[in-house]
Length: 442
Image (cartoon, rainbow, N blue to C red; front, side):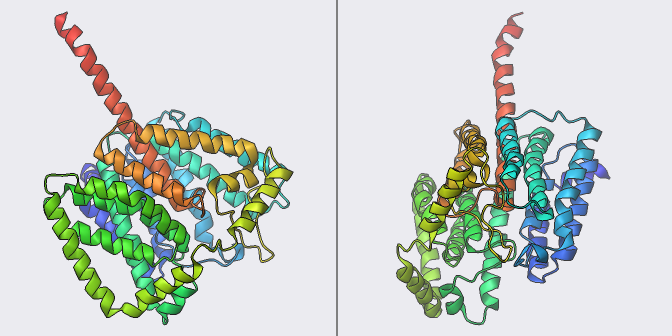
């Protein structure tokens, strides 16, 4: 019975159910029920099965299920505080039960340095509170997630990861659509950039669409009749535009050219191009029906143009904090306003320098180098797509906050873990192939 259940968790219907659950519980604002269910199922998987990979889709579903945007730390519900604790306990039980070798992985030192920087930054923190330690626990959870998945994955699951990501792309896009269907005045929402999905605001939503759209392009490339996938990718691109995130749109614009070349570089490029034209035609018809909405979006971008939205001032603040605390930074909450609302510095490197100092920067650079070398270790279509996804996210990270955000960090760490395991299996295969001739000769 357990074997059949485990086999089901590797199937497409299982991934569809996890994705559907994310949308349904988010839509009905029932994450207080959905997330505990997700956590319970994950805990059972950790305890029962040696290969932890099928727990990742549940984790992603839970991340995109939270529908309420807390205005301050006081608004965070209890079950969110219990979430990292439940996951950490489940992983520890798994490690003990299956005797998992824990410290293997190329990201280990980068993560340990970052964790060290996080605790050292407390020296300069203006205030240490329960919320500060909660965020520190989340940081520890990031470290545990990488070490856990890196050493608990049994097979090459890159294809499984791509399926999960493409479905999560649909989840996020549908949530954006539902948000706008519920808004009384879409034009006003676009003008004020008021989109909030609970688990993230416009810039965060854009990051994940930038990461997920390339996987849709991948399936469009693989499919013989790919009009569905092309139409889906265009729908997701439109939802990206409706996030009104200039940084996210710019990041996608950078990666769109290699993606387009990748898509059209095939024997069926004529059919792909025709399907693209047909999809664009259908979407143009929809645009004409709702022209006022797209006009509002156009005017928002036109009015803002190259306006920095206060970022240059924020960057100066980050540099000032770093100058004051160069070694360990000003602490996780170096930028917090009078209403106890946590803000970031809208740039991956500057935020790291301001909050975690030079020690944190070393950990960050280590992690980025590992991501590049691991993902591009195998030059094939799947790793190319995953590499493009990471590249798009990091480009966005130059003007908005993506690093240290739960959805990105967990996705990135699991992505690296799965690809790293695939690389190890490839190395073992190559090693066995090199040894085989001498064995036959003997």
